[in-house]
Image (cartoon, rainbow over all chains, first blue to last red; front, side, top):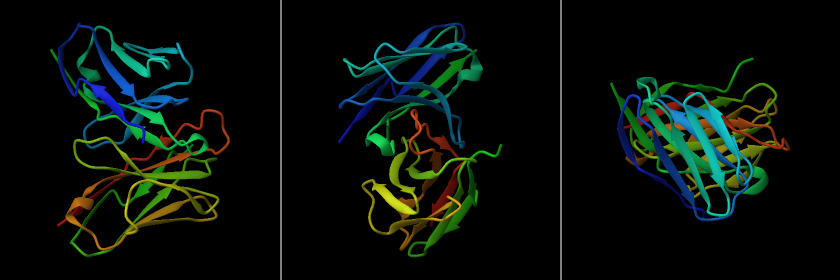
Amino acid sequence: ELKVEQNPLFLSMQEGKNYTIYCNYSTTSDRLYWYRQDPGKSLESLFVLLSNGAVKQEGRLMASLDTKARLSTLHITAAVHDLSATYFCAVNYGGATNKLIFGTGTLLAVQP
Amino acid sequence: DAGVTQSPTHLIKTRGQQVTLRCSPKSGHDTVSWYQQALGQGPQFIFQYYEEEERQRGNFPDRFSGHQFPNYSSELNVNALLLGDSALYLCASSLAGYTYNEQFFGPGTRLTVL
């Protein structure tokens, strides 16, 4: 069974700083997703990464995918308080059914 | 364009009872997946419905069952509730055969079992 691991589990950072969240997965997959979840809320889709070397950026967030290393990163640039949330990576496992296996999540707290 | 909707928003049940959760997919989508998210954890795949059939199932007991209707909406039923069934239940919809097959999540139903 595919396993997805994220680190760190908790990240406290100051506004204006940069940091990276890592997502490792154990079995080959053709799709990787990043989601954001605010407390008590549902999942908001951030990025869909489909191929090796894929890089996508939206605002202060940039995601990349290395399928050979089975590694994805979510880089935060010049963090602001509004980015405080839990971030999940999820990997497609099940081909056409697109069953998603989620990581443990990274709770990001951006301090002023 | 309405996104994925779920009802009810919150639900409180006692052990042994049965519960039914409902989901309407995003307009144009034909596939519904259900996930369970316990507090402090990532969502866990329960099952997926397509063309009114269960297409794939995660590691959940038979107490968890579902249904998909001709209009693509779906229900999740849980029988003989246990305390451990307390969680946020998320419904996600997608379009089968679409290249990216991205899933869009609903707001969730928070189930508390006492």
